[in-house]
Image (cartoon, rainbow, N blue to C red; front, side):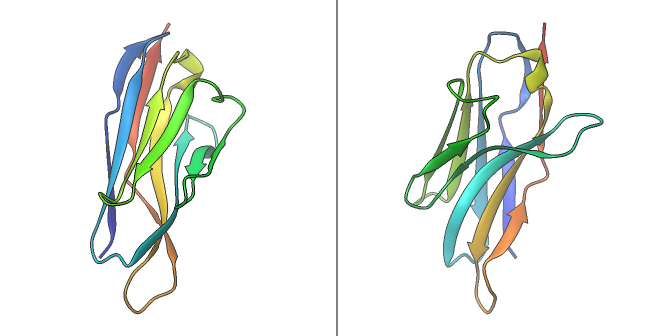
Length: 120
């Protein structure tokens, strides 16, 4: 069974930084795209950033220049470095990965989420 586990959330003041990590575990043949999404109270889940297996990245306009996504394919991990945090970045952040496991097509997997709270 494939699992994604996030860590690194917390409370930070505006202008501060946090680094989120997400580890994939289980029987994994290949990890395709990985990414981070977030959901603020009363809002829909939205894309924050994605990264392909080759390292190509994509960011939401709201985080460009402040957040950096990266991955370590050998460790099956993806990271999100968040700088210059704003109160509007407050949300639960979810890790996402498209994973190929034995006997199945590539499937989207989600972590349980980690809370990021930015105080003004």
